[in-house]
Image (tube, rainbow, N blue to C red; front, side):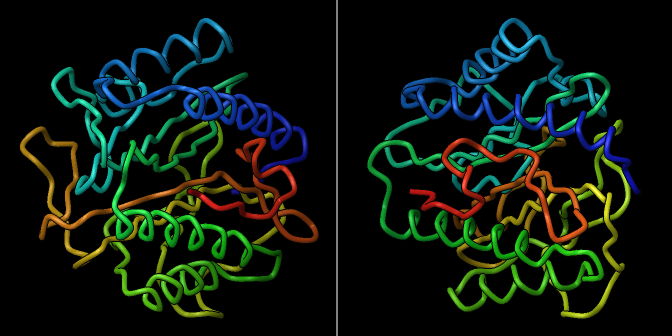
Length: 260
């Protein structure tokens, strides 16, 4: 689970490139695009412009570059030519990128057009929850500190935390140890050590935390049809705290800016 400084530097380069993908998406008018068109655009940018590999394509038999999870879809949404992003939607775009043998993983929930106040609030609180989890990372801390910070913020704002899916170690493989739960108790769980690299990727629901998987075998949705949102960063434990390897340019001062 421990990466040396050279390995973390390679992961930071993958993270830097992945941040550029999201910055390209920030500049793209997504309304009216199908999720398959978004997938194709991202693949072209990663392969042609960044000279990198979209690590999700082919992983576990998944045939696409990214997950597009719209509205009640929690995660692992499959890109489709018939799923058009429309005014009022929220969509989480979850993307992985490999460069020089190391993988970075990040996601962001986008607001499409005129989104309801309730949906905006969910997205905002999810973003804040991710950052509270990130701020809990430090050598000598515990994984439970991360989960507790996320869960407490979600509950204070009336949201539930999806429990079936979690953050994960990452490096030359997309999924490594440890598992990073987004709920828990402070002072419990694995002790964090300098050189650990993992993702923090909370999924918050408006209603119940219960989810189900659609017939495609991939797309996970809320069981009650309520909205869900997610954000994700890849982070490294440092000697003094945490480094966010997938930090975007609008976050370069290390503090969370408003998601909206």
